[in-house]
Length: 192
Image (cartoon, rainbow, N blue to C red; front, top):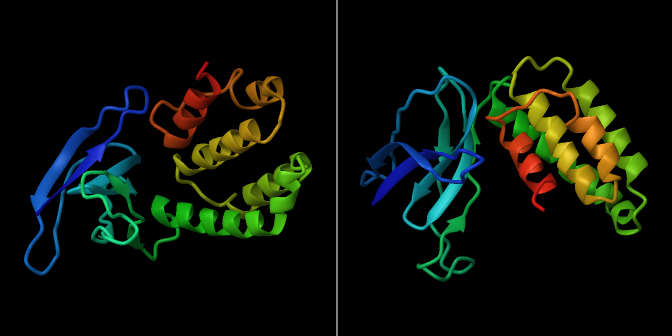
């Protein structure tokens, strides 16, 4: 079976193949490609795909699970699967995203009811300030905009005023054409 890696231009949604290879009898594979900036990369094998962040000059080790026939029963559909990324470098984008997501999951468990009762503005703002302090040391140029626009998407989806969200995140700000969180927020915000 084969495996390929693709970059996804956010505007068009058309994948661009960066590399492909064959999975060996042991289940291992290796892909190499050059990129000049951090990119969200899709790894595909048959009808299963997962997402990882690629960074220039970095080697990333992952475990790509096979399709689970119980939770993904239809071999004709394309299924997303989480990738296990093995990284101990706290400056790596994958490490930072996993760390942020773990903190967000905990926040969500503790504050879910505020979102249900539409009383989430102060809670979300407080969590955003806490995360800005938590990651103030990070120098990865992709991460801070990624985190900011992850919050922008949440604010847009949780009853914040669209005028407020536009002023806070769009008006007079840098356009991050190659940042997945920015472009997902942008496309969602302007979908109509």
